[in-house]
Amino acid sequence: MFEIDYAESGEVVCSGRLDAAQSARAEAFLGRLETSHTLDFERLEYISSAGLAILLKTQKRLSGSGAAIKIINVNRHIYDIFRYSGFNAIFEIETL
Image (tube, rainbow, N blue to C red):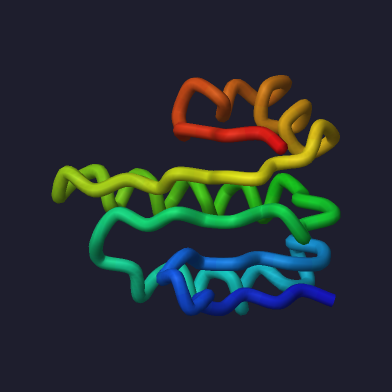
């Protein structure tokens, strides 16, 4: 199961598993972002290549207007996925 919503602080909180089965939900939510946002991954358990593709698409779209995504509270496993894919050079990432 995957959940994505705004926290009271304004950050976008993602939890569960962001995989191909949940990619449409994530893409619909992230597609509405128009300014820089912080994504909190503290409760994210897994991200697939489909999830990475959505993040990349969102980052590219936002960067056209000078905005960006920052990802915080990334666990070691998910950070390794970002590192192995080279996405750690694309996003500002803060680990737990």
